Amino acid sequence: MVDAERDECATPEQAFERHFSMVWRSLRRLGVAPSSLDDAAQDVFLVLHRRWLDFQHQSSLKTWIYGILLRVASDHKRRARRERARWSPEPTDLESPVELPDRILQQREASHLLHVALGQLDDKERQMLVLVDLEEGSAVEAAEALGINLNTAYSRLRRGRQSFEKALRAASSSKPRADLEDAARGPEAVDITTETRITTETNGE
Amino acid sequence: MNERLDTELSAAARQVIREARGADDPTAEDEARVKARWLAGIAAGAGVSSLSEAVRAAASTGWGLKAGALAAALAAAAAGVYLGWPQLSESPRASTPASSVTGSPMTGSPAAGSPGASNAAPSPGPAPRPSATAPVTALPAPAGASPAAVSPPAEGSPTQEQLAPEPPGTAEPQAIASEAVPPARVPEKAVAVKAARAPTPSRSVRRAVLLKAPAPPVERPRTVAAPLPSGQLGEEIALLSEIRNNLQSGSAARALEQLAAYRQRFGQPSLAMEADALQVDALCRAGQRDAARAAANAFVSRWPGSPLQQRVDAACR
Image (cartoon, rainbow over all chains, first blue to last red):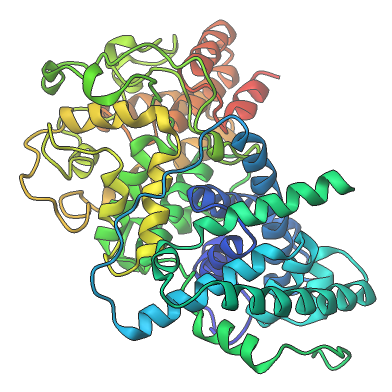
């Protein structure tokens, strides 16, 4: 097995083992719909596999994978927006959980807030926030993954954090604790917010 | 790291992030499912550098996942999410005759519309396909392929058993994916259920699969894992990658023999699409251009929208 402390993976399979969780989680937090997560995650690793020999170690493997997953996430969201016009929204009539420990409820609630707030950010802000504040990367790594210069990265991060704080405040005041069903249901509802926001934005540009 | 920032997150924001930690993490089943699809996706792809290692890992416990998880993954893949099972457009219950239990599930005509929308993927990615290819009898068999080879998993296939978590008549196809998910993880469960639902037209097919399965268990198992021999996916991948290696080293004739052997051995292989793609390639390289063209045409009809299409197109160039 590869040394878990090092960001070195000798094979794509090791890269998969080591980074799958991060990829999955980040795709979700970047706004990829639950129904597309499997495909998006698979795409990330197919690209990784295809380009494995091109990876030159000029950045860390993790940063390289970030770069791939950011593009894949954008692709999937763009496609989802197009398809949404033609397809009815995904059903959300899932049964709600019966009894859940407080810890899990708390996690769900936090997760719900997180997704609602992330949904309020624009794509660029969200990318920075996910890479830096959620995945605990550095702004330098994020800049590399996004192929932008460091100052731009910092300024996006700054804006992202401000928007995130604002969105979080709005979300916590408008979403009382009672509204746990939504939280339990997962961030599905968030997508609508996200998409609305993005659509507005795209139209504005 | 971020010392140049003049805006740090507030304590409250950091707390939300901390508390939400883990909420979006994949389950072991998520990981196994995606990994199986990924391996299947690269099994027939070009330029694989370390597939043999993947195969060893998949075929042994070295995968790091329980055999059950692998089985669940394969079941998910074989259910048509990736491997190109047909996506039929009719309503599940009305269109699936009970006789399907013993015969071919002629559940309907090919869906004319687009496949499961949100699943369409960039070139190497997976894409559900809309055409009706499940029923053995409805298959446009690739000219170069032996008949057995073009059948999707049917009676007796271990994969099939995986796909029958519920008895016919009460089965909801989308339950397949959700079975693999621990009940406590509702967000992930939602993911799984929706993942299964996304290509809406495929429901009837899955139902057909359910109906065809031998001796469906009466109880809903907690996972779809149990009876699949854990080595089959690994063996299939191993054989296909050997075939590809032979192709790349110029032994097209040998590859064709091996493809026939593959089909004979795995009468209803899980990686039928990958095998079909290799077949086209092998025929081209063996100089059987007409057969290759026919096989390529058959491939398009059988696997419309396949991520391997590009490869098939490029085979005879």
